[in-house]
Image (cartoon, rainbow, N blue to C red):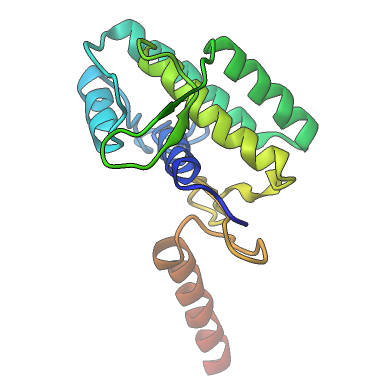
Length: 190
């Protein structure tokens, strides 16, 4: 699947944003909210080089939390029609204004948000359109959650045969393979 550079960046942002949410079914002491405050939101914006971010406040944080929740719903959508409806609603709420841009050393690409858009509208528009690209390509099943029992992180499966099962083969995948190997060795040892 050929994905343009700016779309890939937006998909990476969606995945990281969704993965900042605390799991609602975690026991006490489980992962905390990765965007619990304004400083965390500033760090997220800087890390992803989100353009046009000025002064951020509690209203921005609440709006980004809402966009994050809506992205998570798209990852959980049971079919393309449901995902498309969710994407359409999200992008429409951002009041998209497509325009060409070539900032920060990147070649020409499309921004789907107005220059003065809030960070939440920026994320909803740009990242929502990246998710729209996946749905339009008939690849909605590539929006997944990690299959490791102790991890539910989101990821976009960009493997050639759509076979990726874990958010990271180095952590979750490797940990489960090692555990299975050790279990087989114990069983063989008797």
